[in-house]
Length: 473
Image (cartoon, rainbow, N blue to C red; front, side, top):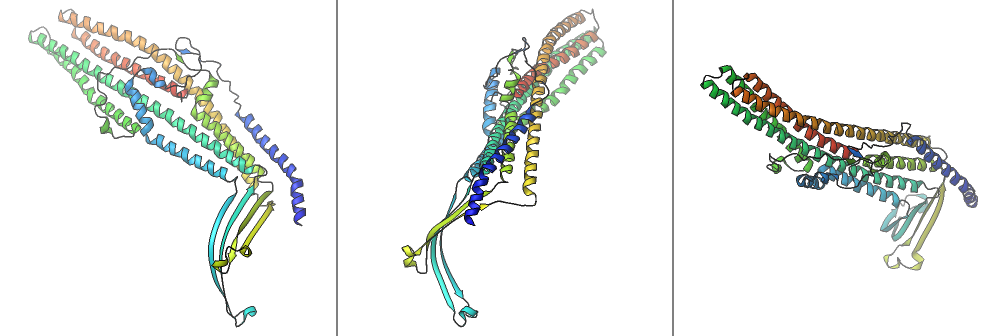
């Protein structure tokens, strides 16, 4: 009977291998068919004026701003941010799971040493009226091994490896997001500090105008209404300073969280008077195909697809027979002194062929579940790819239009500054009403704020563009 079973297994082995290979090819075919996106990708992102069609550069993109403070903040964040540290621990966890799956390809060995003492009842038929005491010492090494004939264990190990690599990409994605958040928070803070400078500069200018109106009023050359209006404009500007200070404090607190420290540790690290960096230059954005290769979230999604494809293949191979081999070798003796004699040697080897015939549709449903997981991961990959294209397109548009806006706002600020100077001179000469000065003051403050916001916004849009391109990691 044993020979017949082994012969049947050997005859079925080529058939099982063929079925397993067919199942794996079907899974790969399903993956290949569904990854294809019907929506055509843009052929290029070449603008000429703002963007260059170049290969993506794998560098520390934030150093292009030539800001040593930003460089230092990003260095601290990458080493101290708790989200980044947690992502690193996830890598260790995934690596351990992969090693554990690999270990199942190898046999397992156990070593046991024991002593047994037992008493047999004297009130059973075979030993009536004779109590028996038995005892023995034993030591043995045992082995269990499942031969991976059809590759199910290998495919599960491969799936764990892909999940481990996906976790590495998720860590890279965390770093990309972290660096972008640090840079965005930094530029937002710098923008707020610049706006604070604008408020204080305008408050000083408005205070000088107030003193002029008071002097003219004392000389009988101006009305009390002029003084009241000048003081109103001056006080309204002062009233905006506490709100702006609260905004600055909020950005500092956000930066503290990103750096993994307490807000008080950042007191005084960045003061006013530190101008926003000016960065208007053509940017190499790369071609869409290169974008897909450099974004960590897309690479992680691709690894997830490959892992689910391997798991689907493994569930198909679970349908085939399993060869289990177990054995042991050791010594057993009733007395310790004769434990290691040749007569005390014991050994056993037990190869077993196991083929599950019915399991309540467990394996059918496991295959269906694996296929659904594969299909879902493919759809997730497609969505992430389209999202990546949209993010790049949006960031490019925002950055390009912000540069155009900056050029116009700089001219508007220059014209408003000249308008204020001229209207104030004419007012001193009594050739124009004070309302012209008030309008020029309000207009100058407004457009200076717009300009600072546009300068800060252009930097933030540029950060978003680098993030959308994969961050250079």
